[in-house]
Image (cartoon, rainbow, N blue to C red; front, side, top):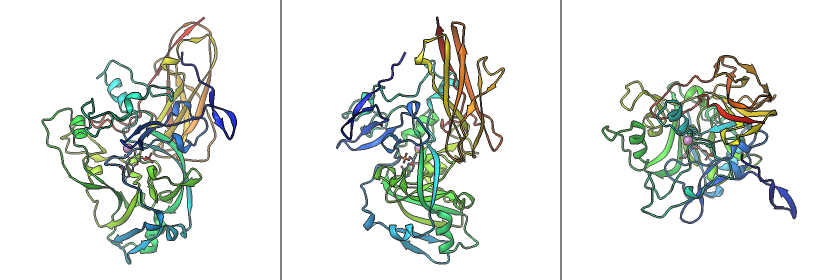
Length: 416
Ligand SMILES: Nc1nc2c(c(=O)[nH]1)N[C@H]1C(S)=C(S)[C@@H](COP(=O)(O)O)O[C@H]1N2
Ligand SMILES: [Mo]
């Protein structure tokens, strides 16, 4: 049984409870380049900035000072413009609360549910031993060859509040031409995507994979999503100025769609008359049955998902009596409407209490008061429903192991 450590640091001179913090991977200079959220311990809906996950696909760029930064908007528009950060802030602003989930979050559970591994993975707690996840010297086990050992792909999800300018406001200022089809968001980070990830996904070296060389991180949003009122170019996060690791001076927020759409470190926005075949859209972050599936499609909206945050397997054994089963639920297609619990492998389901929240794109907290009288082994399942009518789990198996929204039972032992 894991015991919660209640003692924290002194804050403002006073003894304090333990606070949520990152599980981090620093670079050679000790700067944090990856981080994971301790979501099992999160209270409330917004992940504190110091516990928010951090991801970068090509490489973490050097910071650009806000005074030296501009954002150019061009392409299939009546008039191109270049905005400073001050210009951007003069548009009518909008604040959106949403879950950011990396497409690869919880990927290890695909293998588990598909019986490709016997070992049940788990999400990390902040007290997990992260010593394997920090920088290792050259020559140690480092699959990416970038000198970094990354944490498991769990805990790459956080809830945030973002303030910025709706992309639609900017596009209406420049005037979209009738030919406009997609909006390419380009970051100022440049790097070489790691082709090993494609071989890993294909599970063989016997395939041809795209090698794009040095590229800017970019994504081309289909026009409908680009014009959605909640798609914003954000400069603030959780009530504070956006930090470098999260894409300062400004980044895109694409509620409901997986993290890879939320382009950070924006440098330019181009309107195109076709869907631009961005590498992280056509080669990586795709759905398909296999690497050579001719019908691969780009990943877009997240699934409909609930997780049990307590109890998890290693909280066993529990004593007979009352226990509050708790969790989080979110969906890429809008609000969660219901969460259910099953103790009989999904044959029968009972409603859990879902807390009220006005924010469609944010997760909801849910709970179920469990009065267990008999010792024994129990398997607890939770499943979510969303306003689009979807029921967990709806996303099929895909070779890239992206957008996991399967049902992972908590297997719990109950004793006298
Ligand atoms: N410019 C740029 N934007 C990016 C990325 C990147 O590598 N470069 N990574 C994406 C991915 S895969 C994720 S999951 C989110 C992570 O956002 P966060 O670090 O603020 O949590 O940023 C996205 N935006
Ligand atoms: Mo991601």
